Length: 300
Image 1: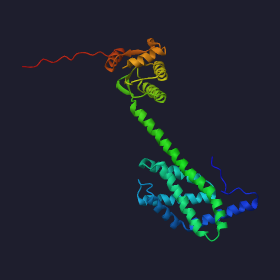
Image 2 (image 1 turned 90 degrees about the vertical axis):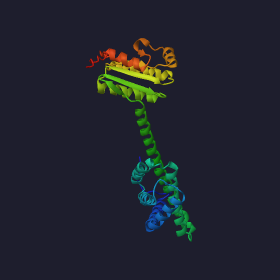
Image 3 (image 1 turned 120 degrees about the vertical axis):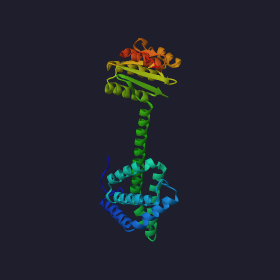
Image 4 (image 1 turned 90 degrees about the horizontal axis):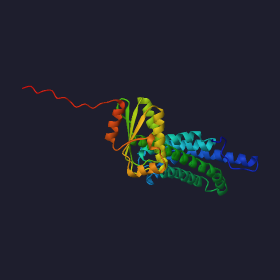
């Protein structure tokens, strides 16, 4: 939860607090007065540092303007909602373009440096005042930098999770090949998270398609640990509760050994050597019959 209130240095008494507030007001006035010069300097240094290379100079300047204004507002009000919201919005737009975390952290640190240099230039004749200004500015600048960086990282993690979820769904399609018949071909490594997702997708497919038979083909799975093997058995049981019979095809000798080792009741699981045999068994259970084509006599 974001804490509202004016950003200020801890002070022993009211006089110290008022002094810190006054210093921040003076700082904000300086940043607003020199807005054009400072944001241009910041955008130039971003380009020179070869940050945000996926963006054009015009885009960099536009974003620099928005970040600068949000930065100054956070200094002035001590609230971070607007900055957090903008940081998330910016992250959504630039992460898909390949912008990395170090680039975002880098541009924020560059802004801090540009602003600090402007303060040195303004108060170079009064080092006492300069030190007091910096004492009021640095804690706020640190928190702002942290807010932007954390917002970017959180958005990046969210996108990565969504991409991983999409990849898993694409890698485990539930296919309807006939009415009431589904096939779930599994390829690659199955970890506990993917195993849970497989179960969810399959059960959803059974309900949606009112499936009576499901063929789970694991020919493309080289190995399976005991936890995942148990999950496979649970998937078979859950499918049965929804009224579907599961046929497992393509068991490797290693996976078969794992099932035996963990004590799976193989009487509850229908297994067939390969996918073709599994489909034929599924069609038999559904009452389909394969009849040879009768060719019509060729007219003379």
